[in-house]
View: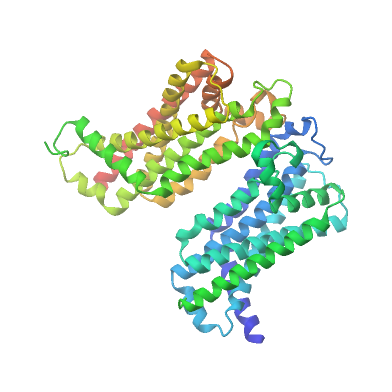
Length: 257
Length: 262
C-alpha cells in the first residue's frame, strides 16, 4: 500500500509540475473555458429573454454551468494527452517497469486531472462571480455542484486514459477530444432542453451529460436538482470508464508499455 | 515541358494539384473542414432556433442565419491547411530543394493557395447542399449563390494567405495550430451567433462592431436572409480583399526570407 501511494504521488507530482510550469499546457486549460464563458454569456445573453427561458439565476449563471462541466471534462482530456505523450516518449515504459502495481499510475493521473480541474474551476468561478454571475444556491448546493464537476472530470479522465493506454500515441488526441466535445455540445448548451429543436433535442434527451448539466444548473439556481437521475448517471459513467481505463492499462502492460 | 521550367501558370497548376492531392490524402485535414462546420451548424441551429423569437431577429429560421458561420469556419480551416502544408514544406526541406530549381517562388505560394481554394470550394458546395436539404433558402436566388461563392472564396483566400504567412514565417506546423484558437476566438467574438443589434452586453457589441470578422459574416449572411444589401456586400468584399492582400504580401515576404535564410 505504501508503494502504491509512492507511485501515485510521484506520477501526480510529475504531471502536475509539468502542467504548472509549461505555459503551453497551463494557458489553454484556463483560457478556453474563459473564452467560451465570455463568448456565450456575453454574446448570447439576450437568449434569456426568449419566451420559455425560465432559468431564474440569469443567462450568465446558465452558461457558467456549461463551462464548469466543460472545463472539468477537458481537464481530463488534456490529462489523456499527457498519458499518450508519456507513452510516445518512452517515459511510461520506464514507469511501468518501476511500479509494482500499475493501477497506481492510473490513480496518479486521475489525481493530476482533479488538480488541474480544481485550478481551472477556481479561476472560472472567480471570473464568473466578478462578472456579476448570480449564485442562488446554499452551501449544500455548492458542494453538489463541485461534486458533479469532480465526477465529470473523473469520468472524462478515465475515458481519455482508456484511449491513451490503448493507442499509446498522441495521434489519438482527436479520439479523446471529439467524443467529449460531441457529448458536451449535444446537451442543452444554449437554452434549456425544452427549447431545443429538431434531432438535437432527441439526442439531448438521451445524452447522459444532460441530467448532469441540469442538476448543476439546479444547484446554481438553488432549485430542486434531480439527484435521483443525476447520481446514478454520474456513478455509471465513472464505473463504465473505470473499467475501460483498467482494461486499457492491462493492454498496455501486455504490450510492454 | 517540365513543370519546373514551364510558364508560371503551369507551375502554379502543378503545385495546386500537389496541394489538392496532399490534402485529400490526409483525412485529418479534409474531415474537420467538412464535418466540423456542419456539426456546429446543426448544434447551433437546434440550440439557438429559439433566438428567432426575439423581437428584431432578421429571419424566422436560424439555419438560414447560421449558414454564414459554417462558411466562416471553412475559411478558418483553409488557414490551418495552407499554413500547416507550407510549414511542413519548410520542415521537410521541400522548400529548399524547390529553391534549387528554376521554379518561381510565386508559383509555390500561388499553387498552395489555389489548392486550398479548390478544397474550400468543394467544402462550400457541401455546406450549401446540406443547408438546402435542411431547408435553407437563399433569398438572393441563383445570382446570390454565385456571389456567395465569390465572397466565400475571397474570404477563404484571406484566411489561407494568413495561414501561409504564419506557416512560412515560423516554419512550424505546431505554430500554425497554435494560431487557430486565436482566429476561432475572433469568430466567436463577432456577430456570428446573433445580429449586433440584439447583443445585450454593451462591451460584447462594441467588440463585435470593431471585429472585422463580423463584416465578413454579415456579408455572407445578407445573401441568405436579407437580400441584395450593397453595404453589407461592399464591406464583406472590401475587408476580405484587404486581408487577402495583406496576407499574400506577408506570405510572399516570409517566403523570400525563408528561401534566402536557407
